[in-house]
Length: 204
Length: 64
Image 1 (cartoon, each protein chain N blue to C red):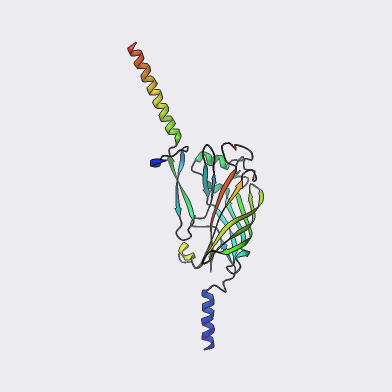
Image 2 (tube, each protein chain N blue to C red; image 1 turned 135 degrees about the vertical axis):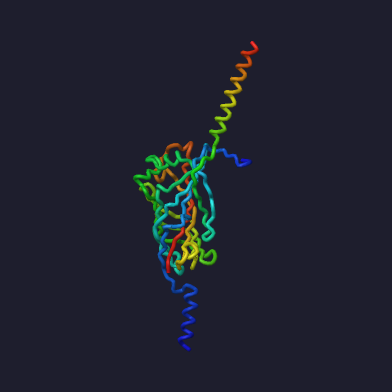
């Protein structure tokens, strides 16, 4: 009888993920949905595009979401814009210098001011460091973390586990990251509006 | 712009935005393709101007 009660309690606790603890989520997205988007408004023509070469990992514990930490990298060569010639310029040494700086990184050290915003959804201030073109800057930006329990199979059929969706927006200054600093300001905006849309995979 | 016309320069890729049903993430797919921009309109106007000028010149020459 006692064994049966203990079994039932354990089952309930497992169902509510109490024993889940911290899990490492792999952000290399085989579905190609994860992306970093960017928009730069300009008097002549606005520039917008995205990058899908996402990799890295994040440790997440639903009981301690504020301790979420890890690193996500974006391959510079995966930056895309609708104009081929413009993309060639972006890859060049004046702009992103993709050969010398093949990756942009977001190192997340924690999330402060977290508030629950639904079932498995947390909103807060991501704290960490963003490195672009070898220039590292403190990063503090609003993010939404969505923990999709048991949804791994929906993305990777036959696998059991969870998904972690990290999304947010931030504005960075291209001068600050030496992206053709101080140049072409009449044609290309200094502010870059960045959207982060990353999916992490964790197998149970 | 009405009817799908656009004000930008010519694109060499066609962008297909979509929303992932499982995660709700908005993403884009790029496909090779030409989306004509204002250069095409400018060349059209230039062609019109050249033909109009030539026609006017020839008409003037014929009448004189």
